[in-house]
Length: 295
Image 1 (cartoon, one colour):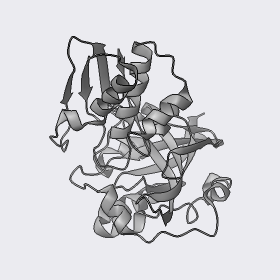
Image 2 (image 1 turned 180 degrees about the horizontal axis):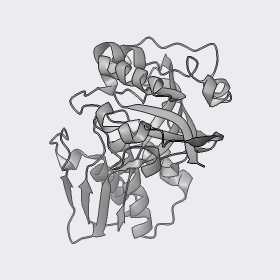
Image 3 (image 1 turned 180 degrees about the vertical axis):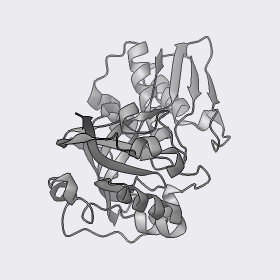
Image 4 (image 1 turned 30 degrees about the horizontal axis):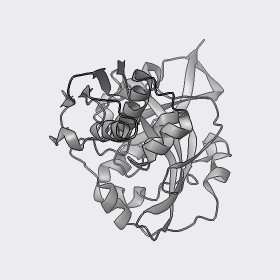
């Protein structure tokens, strides 16, 4: 069985307060982006094994047994006695980019094992298991726009305007940008066109893979606070009004440490995007622009 775990972006991210358990309460809107994917294969096997490969630069060499895919299998094996499998993961998504690539791999592993072994678990049951792997893992079980609260695992549906969440029309042709110079295709207007006032597209710019950001360090660098206007109130406004209102609390700190983040966001606006921001704890940047339709 083969699947293609996608990434996510955070439309706004408010860090509200530090909790007694050491986590933070947040509010964010998770949305899937399908223009970037890993490749994950799982098959039954006489003994458990996991192999992680990548042709992309900047992918660290880590112990495969500590990967969330391996942790997801151990969790399912302990709970349901599914037996050994062979896992093969080709990493294409950025690591440490604020896009949840590792969380997606873990959640997709749970979903694949549920199907492969006909466990019959529902979405809520899978999401509860995913929460044991990581705070944003439950989102990838549902993989649709959802408000995340608590530490990110408390999810509720949210209706967005028509937005294309990825694919060739919404980003670079290979779905993995390394900088603005690679993104001319995504930003170039296709000549004389009529602009729809309701259709938008989401694109993601994965910055230099050397700009690694530790989520734990990012949390230590900010002061939690409750905004005057809630995330839901801001998101209920027209997308063209989000600039200056929809904020990521990590963005000022990460931009100060990595000026390329701010430069990239400014470049998105200079090219006519209606909104641009950093995703998660960074440094990846996403943009929303209007979808051009040729006459």
